[in-house]
Image (cartoon, one colour):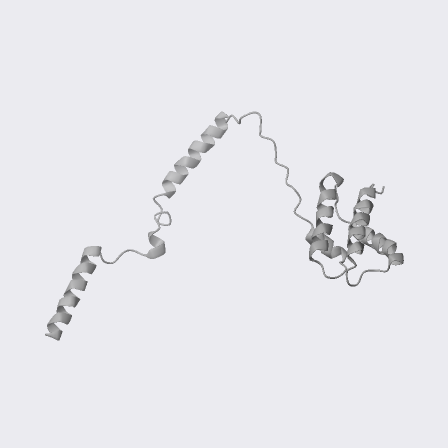
Length: 155
């Protein structure tokens, strides 16, 4: 069963009227416009179109092409110029989730396992950087000794 895509034919026709009025480079002859429109329709009807959503998107795409194109477009130019489809938000859930006794038991078990993992070497992150070899005070002492040695050599 063929979908009713008369709205798509009309949208293409309106877009072609606008583009033809611009007299873009590579524009089909007036006698060929209908055949080109049929070709566009046969190519574009393969998409999953929804009239409520896509009529305005197709009009916007033709307007974008009209404003930016220097030559007659191809169907791919139209699909590239289509604005993103609006996303419908899912309505908020009316009932709040109530955990079951089994769910509470599983949560307790998972919390215990996570508490045990915090003491594992990979969780205290020492394995990434290695154990520190010197304290800050030791580094300061070493630096001070090197400075004294340099000063004594310069004297």
